Image 1: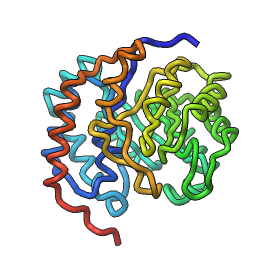
Image 2 (image 1 turned 135 degrees about the horizontal axis):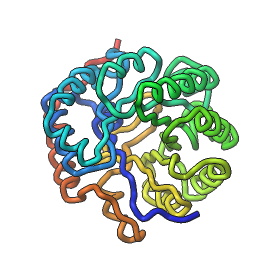
Image 3 (image 1 turned 120 degrees about the vertical axis):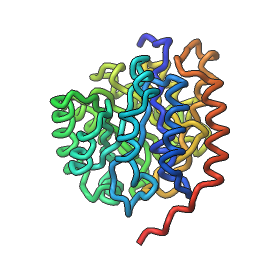
Length: 302
């Protein structure tokens, strides 16, 4: 498979990064974060998620963030330069809410195991897949780009090792449903190079590599190597979070995401490049670290 020299970076610090931090940032600070990230010119930025506030209070202000984003001149300039803004929805209710915003992309998710799916969205895999497939179609009708994440694609904290055949069945289903991009997610950060090569090879037996990407957590320091393995197989779409923030609050043991600055730093050694500005990302990572130290503690969930 031909390697694409230019990497497409999806920045997830404002959503997947902040949702698993122990503090809450104000809307003003979140807007500063988004402006800083947008100025570094990633392909896209995930600004937040439309979830129940009692489950993820860090994301309760996402509608306000989106409203302010719609009026921000810097956001218009970023869009003109090609940056797209995304938001995650766990179900139809969240989907209906995101359609009221002007976000460019809608992020959906399906867990690869029933155990995690029930814990995360209170649905079996089959039920979540049926709903997501319908929402993919509706997103396209609404003129929105769809990103579909398959979480626990390698291992689940509840069921253990994930069956690759189960993952491939899900990929095929959402691929045929028309998902614009499908992300294989190592939610626990336990996958190794061989695991990634095996799963990606299976996916590329039927899927266009342009529609496939990786979402790697870096629990054991394998995220960069795993991305490199996929890139050598023709995959060029990767998620990362500035400062390596975040994780999954519904997956015990999930550590932070692959740091954006770490991924960008290694690309020249691959012979690859990315439009995102590494120096700006490094500066934003330092700034964000300081802001997180000053944030308000997340209230205890009932």
